[in-house]
Amino acid sequence: MRRTEIWIAELPPYCILAFFLVPMAIIEPLKILALYFIGTGHIMSGIATLVFAKVVGVGIAERLFAIGREKLLSIAWFRWCFGTAVSVKDIVHGWLERSGIWGVVRRWAARVRLVLAEARARLVLLWRERSPGRFAAALRRQRLGRARTDAAGEP
Image (spheres, rainbow, N blue to C red):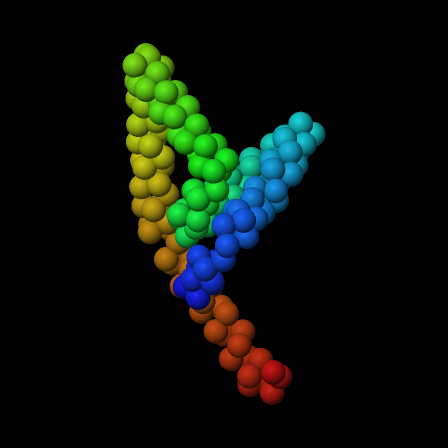
């Protein structure tokens, strides 16, 4: 990966821009596909597709931007778009922090994190209480099955 990053960093600005835009061109149709899935009643498939598209798209785009930031910002129109996007983000973020919505969302997110942590703790406890015996039994059955096949001379 390091060699690939070095290779990308050595490319001219517009080549890096092409690499930066390719994930976006792939991810946007996936988002539309996710909406189609949701619209046709395949909600979990739609959500999974959307999450995949966002995580992979943002991850790849962020890494490519970090690698080629200097060269990308040497393109005047890209620098202007980037500066404008950051300014708009700062304005919206400031407005959200000043509004009551931000506090409500933060409290809601904290509750969701707490509920998820409690659910995870319960699942771990349940797994530890019930699964080790089942898992061990499954391993014993699997070993016995292999021993029988080996004794019979089968591969």
